[in-house]
Length: 105
Length: 368
Image (cartoon, rainbow over all chains, first blue to last red; front, top):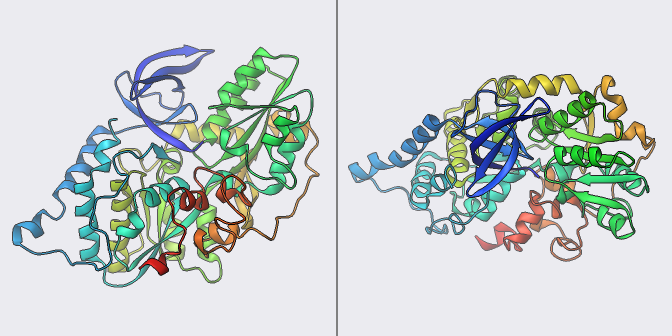
């Protein structure tokens, strides 16, 4: 129920004076209520909870976050500083990172 | 999918983990509020990849888990009525009431239907004018805008055969209750990102100041969770207690203003009992008096159903972070997702269900 999923708005229309639209979730199209995101336009991405778009995803913020994450540790690498080893911790990637599901509550 | 894959990059996750390891100098206990974050943490093994100094305490942010037994019993009483079509999100069907669950009511002939959205229930009401359609309106601030819109629309359309059994809970009063509880160990919060997409961040500075606790608005993908943890740890190490937004692509300070307006129009704040925790003042929403005609509790006269919790299930301790799911004597034995003792083992967002699904049968201390 509390699964919040990002999707792209493909079409916007009205039903009973309520702003509705079709949103694409990785190939699956669903009718979604857009009443709470009056600023959203076709092509924008949104987070959807139980059939309602609750926020417009901000592309610039997303790119800034990713750029920050990717730069992390670069300075240490440049300076040849090894991050502290933590005994007993797996060093492999999070096991399910590639196939985990949607975004929740 | 866009906005998912980029935030699951294992190489970048390692950079974040290394940075956290570099920053941390002593033990810190953080609580992730939302059950969706708990699942992301357990599924991706984030708790095991973090430095030993950082403990994650799983919070009560699973709406199915905290819906009190007496509300379940009221739902069962309504759903069993022959004139009723009872509509619910799927994960409520197996939540045990005092004697039965909604699946049992369905197998006994009750018309119980799983819907994706409350608007689906509204559609069923329009298509079945001779039946009473009741929607089980539970959840945190994330599902509330949908439920508010369904009730608002029902009134606007003049539908008289639609009503809602409301059991809405709110995150900020829960944070306040957790921090005020004797024996609290939580030193920092990862606030639930999508709750903040709706409600914004304006309720949190007062809480951060009152309890001198950092609150970092955090998303759900592995990189989002790690960044939330990293920012909380930086604050704790520097002795700060501020409200920060580590999920800026989906959260702005004011939140979703049109949603908040309709929520205020339809709901009013009320005291609410949380399953396994007890009554928390001003921690829920109920329908305003203008919408009483759409309140299933009044329509079907079930407000006098009161029930006590079973003493067998330790979900209250799990929900308050006092017990890890696999430290419960019943975990994986008397209590499994097929035969749950409590709601934390039922819901896809429950901490016990997450531990069971991802094979965490042994308490963490035993494997380190």
